[in-house]
Amino acid sequence: MAFKAKSAAETKAAELAAILIRIADREGAPVQIGVDELRRASPRLTPLAIGQMFRRHRDDLESALSERGYTLVDYADQGPGRGMEFEIAPA
Image 1: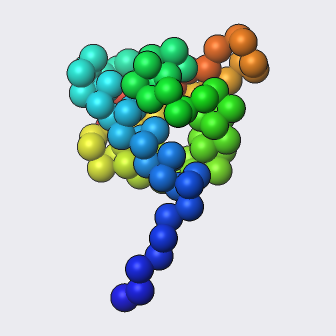
Image 2 (image 1 turned 45 degrees about the vertical axis):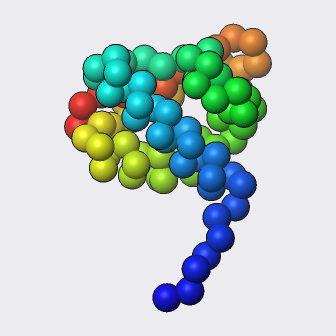
């Protein structure tokens, strides 16, 4: 089987999923995770990048969450400067 290199977006999507899981493990689910908390965990994850990764790699994020026993209940993006939030619950 040939090795397929991940794109930068796929790598960031995996990082986003790992951070969401780590926060859900620490805080306990159900939990609402805002962009500020994500930025503290990884400054590379800008609000623009988070929104793009969610839209392009939602299946990968949901798959990673379900592997750890979580489900993505809701994602709200109210635009620049207004807030962005993930709601994670136990599967």
